[in-house]
Length: 405
Image (tube, rainbow, N blue to C red; front, side, top):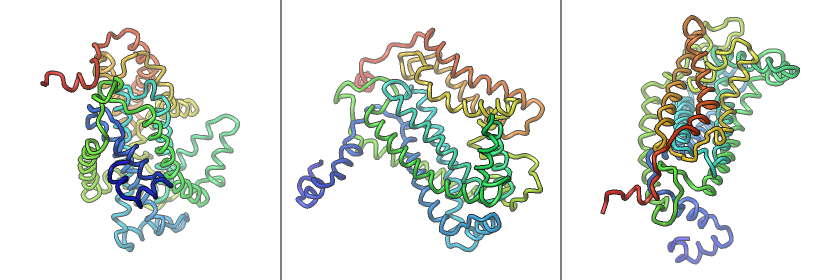
């Protein structure tokens, strides 16, 4: 504990019986962090802030939402028009989901660039992928709740994918629907799970932080800390840095909420759900578009479902697919080049996912999908074997203080 805690006998008495303050002091304030972390490391804390925003606004919205197929759409309109600041709560929650995925995707690609998935951080990486999967499930179920045209038909299309699973597929779909079609039981199930899963994510985040503090943070150089000269206490150095990142994040967030609240949504969701009228083009939210493009790239329904899930599950074995002993792309010129090709490929998949599956977009989607798997399964092991990395610095301190007196 810090001197302030020890100097107060009442605080010391309480902490001796429930060591919350010393735990915070050890894990959040005095936690030894590498002294060279850059702003790409802000996105982990920003993801935590986005999660808190989603939970708080979600609880407030749940007080006014009605999970009934006949009333859901009208209850959302009621929130927007009649509840005090209801429009703000809904826009913050809707755009907050997009902001959450944005910072998590950047956080993942930062991990790919700097090799944060390598030993001894494999479990830390696995927990991050589990968080992503839980986020996707939560976001999909939340997208259904407004019960607009796009919500209804997205639920119909996505849940129908499970019917491609041999033997048990139809039973899974019937269980998800709660009947023989998307309807009131489906909405109630999705509402319950949408409310529950964020708290599952909180549990996964706790384990993620536990694994982080066990393995310690990676850094831009990808080398381990070798003593006090390589470290800085998390507070005040990185708390101030995170506060600056949070300020920039909320500026961007507020720009969407107040000036373009519907920019990331679909206008068809302002039309009440109609099972008899199919939208011209059914598309998911933007953060699902790369996976939607992979799904559509395979002509076979079961093959598309397998490819879509495999595009995420392959990330679990990434620590063993990358055969290089060097973590950071800073010292890996070939890997760095192909990393940016992968980023461009994922962006291209997102663009393809937003387009109708016709003409040249079909071929572009298939090529982009093929490259995604070739990059992870073939190129990463091959690059690790043939690449000659640049020499690593002796220590973090030596690299940071190089050229300084």
